[in-house]
Length: 628
Image 1 (cartoon, rainbow, N blue to C red):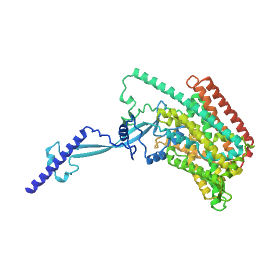
Image 2 (image 1 turned 45 degrees about the vertical axis):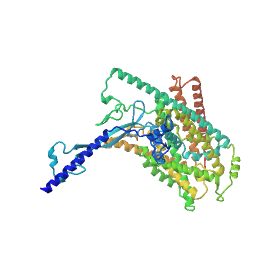
Image 3 (image 1 turned 90 degrees about the vertical axis):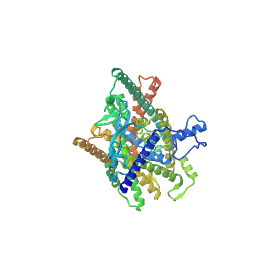
Image 4 (image 1 turned 180 degrees about the horizontal axis):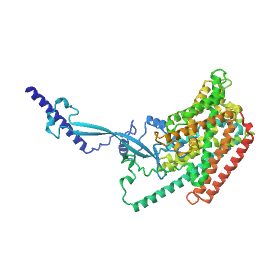
């Protein structure tokens, strides 16, 4: 009896303790928040600083507003490594969206993410029936004696408007513009002479920026039209149907049995939503004739990929000759190997997955450019010693101002942008805030001018350092040595990793069937969908093989290939189409158009047309003079 009595007392004491703990928790939860007094000394920086601490510090110093928290270095580096602005812009440049992206009627991209969360249901034990107090002690756990926990998982669709910062867009401009094409400039300067090359590059940059500005104004005009139509539509719906159901309101998601109170109505995400890309703006301006612009963009991107297939084998041939002590590996061996690598990479349906490899390629390209400049400035290959900088200055002063093949540089001066004009609109769309959207055009001008200034400096220094024997693939002209070999290998790896990003927009235009669009999701259990994907992959493989065959026959004419692509395809895309589109789309909008602007647009477009005809004709007529 005494033993039973003691056990009963222990059990009652346990219940009393637990009930007291529950009451304390409830009182703590219902207690009002207590404002902490301001610190006597307000520091300006602390690791992991937050907005609340900065607000208190600003109040301590008597400031009206507090500054934004500084991001830790680790967070900034992580953001840079995981940023996929450029990859998304390449997808959006031809109107392709990923499976988790939706486009509303206003042309805005929404990112649909599936969030998994655990829902916990608790019930109190021992409160409904007094007989629960007389259960066996083994069934009563001290931690779970008052709670019966039931857990289950639920999913929620979260809809966010996709967008990034202006800094991410700037990195997108830099990474989209600076590529292997910069290595073609030293030989281009040599072929033209500095008196022709520098003015040509400045003129091409000025006209390119002017056309890019007009293209962004076309985007603004069409965006404003869409926003006005949406406002009118909303007013009409509010007038005719003042009461909407919960499913019709913007802010709820219900599709295929998945619902959420946090998101965007999927009825707004109809397939009619269209991205305002370069091809889409051309369609609104030219109608059915806009297909020429799409095919031109595809030809430009395929041309860039063609130069990659020539550039990489040339580098690896020179590299293996130095490493192996003079063994000459045939060019086509490396060409076949690169084609076999690029074929499966072209099957990737969402190139945002290539963000880590693209970041790696960017770092390798930066290493290659800095190393090439270091060799050009300080290293003399014949004596393997550091030379005086005065000797380099003397070489620069002796460079030829004009050469017989100057006309080849006209196309090269436009090719160096690598079709980046097609990325301007997606990068503008990717900027999130309205203030940054307004600043983007001027920021694009400043960033591009800085890039072109570096282009001129790089081309002059490398031409003077390596002489008139400099090759189109600059890394193949480096003096023998381990540093040069490392540059050739790493730069080749960077180009191999960049290839699928450049090829993606062209592949999407070539495989224009909706079911074979790379970014679209589909039912993998559907045989028709599988067949469409198989057709797309087969088409992509055949196209890359054809580029490989062309590269085999054009191995000695890389400079000519660059020139013909820039003159025949690059100039119309950069100069002609945007200005004519602006005159058509802005003809009834006095805010963006005037007689002076229309005349300027036609002058720039006419200059581009003359340059296209003249540069293309002279390059084809004097094809053999550009051989290496």
